[in-house]
Amino acid sequence: MKTDVSAKALNLFKDYALYFVLLMLLAVIVFKDTSFLSLTNFSNILTQSSVRIIIALGVAGLIVTQGTDLSVGRQVGLAAVVSATMLQSMENVNKVFPQLDVVPIPLVILLVCAIGALLGLINGIIVTVMNVTPFIATLGTMLIIYGLNSLYYDFVGSAPVAGFDAGYSAFTQGFVNLGGFQLSYITIYAAAAVVLVWVIWNKTRFGKNLFAIGGNPEAAKVSGVNVTLNLLGIYTLSGVFYAFGGFLEAGRIGSATNNLGFMYELDAIAACVIGGVSFSGGVGTVIGVVIGVIIFTLINYGLSYIGVSPYWQYIIKGGIIVLAVAIDSLKHAKKK
Picture 1 (cartoon, one colour):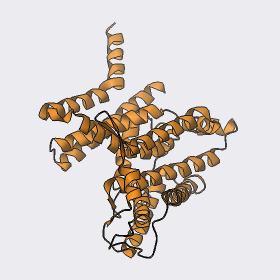
Picture 2 (cartoon, rainbow, N blue to C red):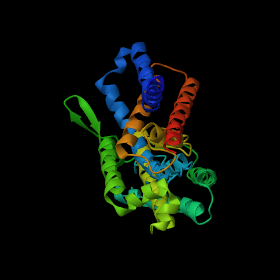
Picture 3 (cartoon, rainbow, N blue to C red):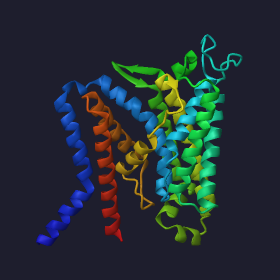
């Protein structure tokens, strides 16, 4: 009897311990400043979460296949800087390309997404064809991409690229007023991305192949799944999501530098794990990713709101990540 109770208690801990810790953190934040619970703050949190959701959806597909991507933030930064230089206002006296007219937004999106797709494909080739582990492969490309972005940033002037065209600012900073609640356009774009990924994961052969590869790559290969082609596909698609996220982030913030995107991979990966995407592969849901991002952003925003030192924030976030992965490992060990 005692054994059954202990087993149930352990299972309860595995399932809900992380959420209990996060709930306690949120309770402390609210206790410190009750004004945190306002429509304005909720709108801000939702807006900040939206870009992170798009980025996390990219990395989540890799985690499902037992992969990862440390170059996320640097890809976001590159897309942000390229977008910013293409979309500065013609009236901007500091325009980095004075002779260049404002490029139409759809063309800029296509350009940065093509760059993101190429970088993602390169990551995929290094992992699948060159047989380098995803951690090392993307660690290397993270440094390469940052170097390329910094060279480009130095070339255009080594100053924050700002002063955007009104159309770009409206596209990324606009909102719909819903009876006092401001729903940003970026949140709408994120919702569209969520629907797209849900369809890919749940209604296409490609999505089913990803989960089969994550569950057991050898079994998937024996079943006729082209593992290499599918992995190349998901790495390429991930690069597109990072690039679109970078395009939106530059416009949302109002400027871009070569350091934009620093540590974004940390938040994206942590949010995926919090949302139930397992590093063991083959496990994860789109809704879980969305919830994970919102929870993580809520904690980030809340800690800053009550004035917690950034250094303590790193400690708390690191602890959450370790706890999330430890719990995921316990669940996986039980299944084995």
